[in-house]
Amino acid sequence: MHSALYAKIYSGRFKFLISEQAAKSKIMSTRKGQRMSPEAQNLRLLPHQLTSILINEIMNLKIKPTGVNNQIAVEMINERMLKDKFSALEMGVWRIAQIEQEQINRRRNRGLGRRTLTFTTNGGRGGGRH
Image 1: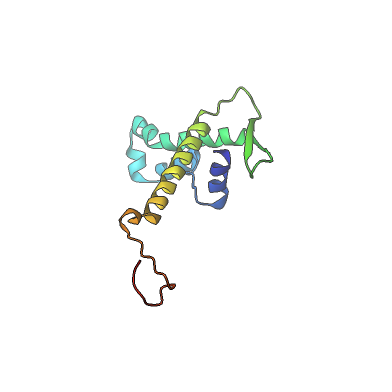
Image 2 (image 1 turned 60 degrees about the horizontal axis):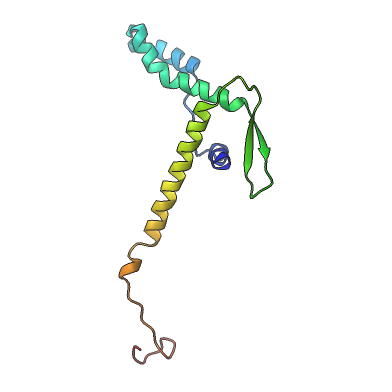
């Protein structure tokens, strides 16, 4: 799971939301954002706050190669900091990769059970079916 997540992040196929501070300044730079109540602003900023926490959790991890099939292990630098959001993200990405692979396999094998196989005795150069 660690390798799959880091591969998606480093390949650029995985994007994070902008930071909480950047989102807050963008919201406050609009008239609509300035008219929002503090509760509405907090609700609008919640995904960005959670992303900031996730990035802090990721920054607290040290990557260690295991030596087995390009797999990696992660080790926490500060043991008091949790890694709940990182683990949830990792499991979600892993499950999505499984579902995508199942879809690819289904498309590849579509209709295989309905096909009839034809064998010839002379390599397909005429003749009859046997």
